[in-house]
Image (tube, rainbow, N blue to C red):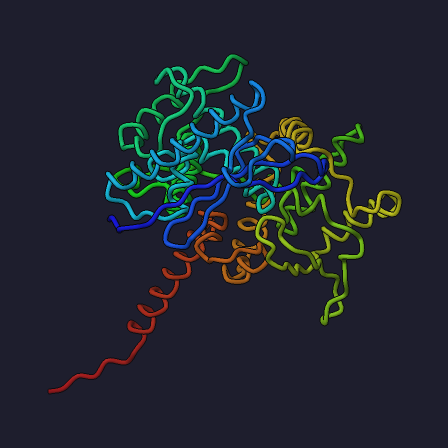
Length: 419
C-alpha cells in the first residue's frame, strides 16, 4: 500500500539534564503533520549550534565531522522513506523511524524478537519458567552459529524448513557437559516457546507469515509415576535415621495427602491453616503457577505430619521444613530404594498420588479432585487423575453383579402357560 505524503526531516536540540551548557541532538520526522522523533546520541555545546541552519557551526574539525554525520543520518532517513515508497508500503513517520532502526517487519531479526520477548515478560513469569526461555534462546544462538554461520536472521526469512532444521539440531545436539540429550517432549517444549515468540512477533506486526503454519508439535504422552496404596503404606511404615531423609519423607507424604505442588508447599505458612465451617482444619492458599485460590481440607495423616514439625515452624515461620527441589528429589530416590519401591519417584509424583490413590480410587468425584488440585480445566485433571486398573475392575465387577441379579430375577419369575 502506498499513499502520497509530505516528508519533513529536521535536526533539533534539547538541553542536557546534567549539563546546561550542552545540547542533545535529535531528529524529527514529519509526515502529513504526524511526528516521530529520536536521539542520534550526539551532543554539542550551546554556543556551537546554529539554530537557523539546524547544523553545527563549522569552527573546527570536530564540528565539521559532526555535520558530515548529520548529513549521513539525513540521507539514511530519506533512504528509509524511499524504501517504503518503492515497496508500496503505508508511509508514516513511525514507519520511517522503524525502517531507519531496522525494526520494521522486514528488518526485525529473530534474536532481537527473542530478546524483546524475554526482557518484557520477566515480570509476568516465575524464574523457573523464564529460565526455560533463556535455554531456548541459547539453543537458537548455537543453531544460527553452527548451522547457518550467522549470529542472527531476519524474521521474514523464517520458514517451515528453518523450524524442522532447528528441531533436528536440538534432537542431535551433544552437550559439552555430561547429560542426556533432549527427549522428544523436551524438544517440543523448546519449539513451543519459539512458537510463542513468533506469535508475539506477528501480533507486533513484525512478521506477516507464520512459519509454524504447517508444523505440528508432537508431544508423547508419558505414564506418570505415582504410589499405589501398598507403596504408600511401605513409605509410611519405613523409618529413617538421618534427619534429612525423615524431613523429605514427611513433606512428600504431606503432599500425597494434600495435592500441593513443591513450590506451594514450600511457601506455606502456619497462618494459612484455618478452621473451616465444618470445624476441621483447612489449608487456605493460592497456586503459585496460576494464582487460583486453593482451599484443601486436611486429612488426619497430614495433620499428624504438620503437628510433628510444630516446633520447627515456630522457629522458621514456614509450615514444614522444605529443602531445595534438587536435594528433595535426590533424597526421594534414596527413600524409594530403601522402601523397595522400584519407580522413578519425584516430588511431583506426590501430586499424582493424591489425585489417583488417595482421592479418585476412593470414589472422590473428578470434579472435586480438580477443585482440590486448583485446575482451571477438568481436562487438566484427567491427565493427573487417571482411572486406576483397580477402579476399572471394581466397576466391571459391579456391572457383572448387576447382570447376574437381572438373570436371577428372570429365572425366579413365575411362568404362565396358555392352552
